[in-house]
Amino acid sequence: MPPPGVAADLDLAVVGPIARSARDLRLLLSIIGGSSIHSQAPPAELKRLKVALWLDEPAFPLDPDVKATLDTFAQRLQNTGVIVDRIACPVSAERLLSTYTLLLYAIIGADLPWAERRLYELLRGPAKIARAMGANALSWAQSVLAYTARHREWLQANDARAQLSDAMRRFFTRFDVLLAPISPTAAFPHDQRAIQRRTLKCSDGREIAYEEMLK
Image (tube, rainbow, N blue to C red; front, side, top):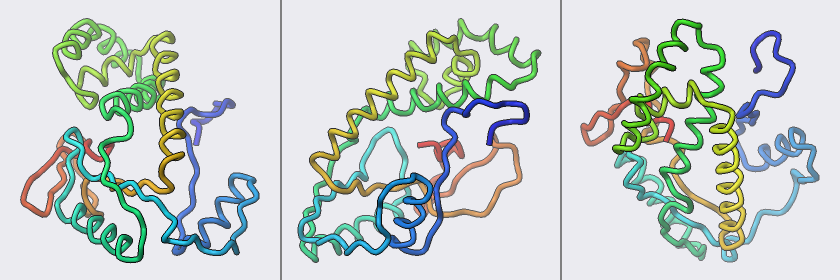
């Protein structure tokens, strides 16, 4: 929801349903989107589906249990005659995440206290150097640059978003479904600590940064 006093639509704000079945999702999405999707449409013929399975991306950590669960489901689909192809990331993972974090943090940065924003402005120079030297899209450097993004930089990110969207539209001319994890781990207990101190525990004993959830 936009903060009080904001009349314009807030960029990146989305609405989506939670449901127990695909049929309920079709009904809810048709109401939200105002489309003509019919909740009683017959199920798709599985043997005609082309599914892209995206599980391996070096830039994105993934809990082995989550990967195994999706692998098992993909195998069940194949057993019913579905065509399942393992793919690499359909777009550049770095560009995807850099674009998203700039658009997201630019919104957050617009509401920062003046003193904090002033500090980030002073850090823009070092942040640019850090990014040029390889700091990734979840680094402090990217956060600083996004919090203080100029309109020109936002326009560049918005154009990148349009190009990524177009790439995905072309992707779905070759596949019907993209099967991929929505987060690096399964659901976990809420952590009351500051976000910077939180970690996520994987089934193999690894701990990853909480912000990896953005991937």
